Each structure stands twice: as structure tokens, then as C-alpha cells.
Length: 84
Length: 204
Image (cartoon, rainbow over all chains, first blue to last red; front, side, top):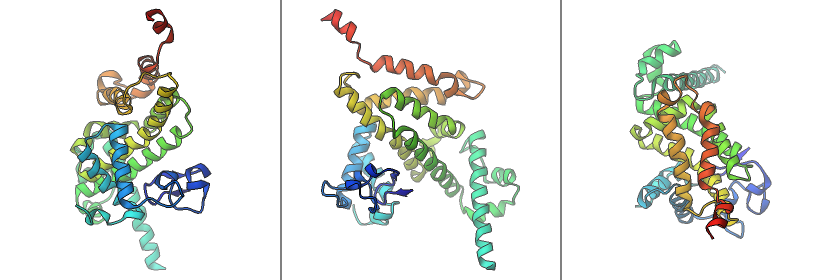
């Protein structure tokens, strides 16, 4: 079983992959509509928005958690040091 | 070859220590446990524990990362195929029940833990809020659920479950909160959020 390099989600079925392409290392939720992988700023914004929308977190708290959580994933290792 | 065996042994010892720490934390609490308690329970010297985890915070964080990750993965597996809200809620509880003593410690103590461990707690919640929000969106759209913001629907549910778990000594002194109350919580939460067309008809 592969896990998404960008968000850590386990990918177990074709519909978990962008355009059902199982050769990809990132999941459908980390892809743009054309199947390419979202950039770090896009993913950071998306993760922050997800935490606010589904769990009701404060915007800044969600932003900080998103930075720390993404920094542990293979696609974004060390990224937390590159931004404010 | 010698090095490989040694590395393997080191890995096994580390995994055994994590497992022991998980069990001791589940039973006695996370902040209540000393490194020496884990060494004693694992049958190793205090020095062996320190050789693998230099500080208590490192040990706690690693245990929470390892077992929090397992809880999140299991929740994702169970909830991923659910079509309706009631199924999601039952799947959520089934996942918690497999780890109930440790999950309960996290409910009570996560606020006191280091940021890395606290982030894992949020990830565990994300593993269910992700599926919950998708199903809630569909049920609101189709008129089966009352129209509240997704995060409030979610927080009302987890608030209820976590309240029972945090006070498990009062609700289920035998130690099985989910087994005893799970079905009741699901049934009554559903009554809260389901739209009742008959009542609406009478009012209209």
C-alpha cells in the first residue's frame, strides 16, 4: 500500500489516485484538476482550510499545525524553515 | 553481518519499548508515568530506555506518533467505505474501541503534550473529520441532515464521545465506555441531526 507523499493519506484503490493513475505517489486530493501535484503553498492553504472547515480550528492555529504536519511528509521535508 | 544483527536487535528493542510504553500509558496515564516505570515493565535497565529515547518527551512523542498513526489508519480504513452518517459514526467508534484505553488517555492529556504529539492528535481527528465532512455535505444537500456548519456537526459528535471517554470512571467503571454507550450515542446523535419531515409537515 502506498501513502501519499504530500499528505500521508493511504492510497488503496484507483479512485484514490489523480486521474486513477496508480503510478503516481500523491493522492487525488493533492492533485490539480490536470493531475499534476499541487505546490507547497497550494497544499498549505488547502490543509489549513480543511482544518478550519471540518474541525473549526482558529485560522492561525490551523496554519501552524498545517506547517508542522506537512514538514514531516516526504514531499515537503524541511519546508517549515523556509517560510515565515 | 554482525552489524546487521546488532541493528536488528536495536530495532526490536526499540519497538518492544514503544509497545511497553503504550501499554503502561494506557493503564496509568501518560504524564503520570516515569521512564523508570517503563524500564521496569519492559524488564530492561533505565540506561537501555535512555539509549533509545534521550528524554521523556522524545519517548512520549514517539509513542503518540506510532500509535496515533495506527489509530488514524484504522479509522480511515473503517470510515472510507461508509455511505451514510450513521455508518460513519459507528465506524469511528469501532476504530476508537480497538485502542480505547490509550485513546482515552489522549482525550484527557493531549493538551499537556509537546506540540509534535499534539499535532498527531489533530491528525487522528482529521482521519475521521475528512470522511465525516464528505458524508455530512451529502446528507445536508439531500435534506436528510439539519443544516449546520460541518465543523459544528463534527464537534458536537466528538464532544459527546470524548466527554463520555474522559469521564469513563463515572460512566463505565468496568472500562468499556464505547461497548456500553456506543450504540446509544449514535442513535441519539442521529435523532439530533436528522430532519424530521413529519414534524415539519405539521408545523407547515
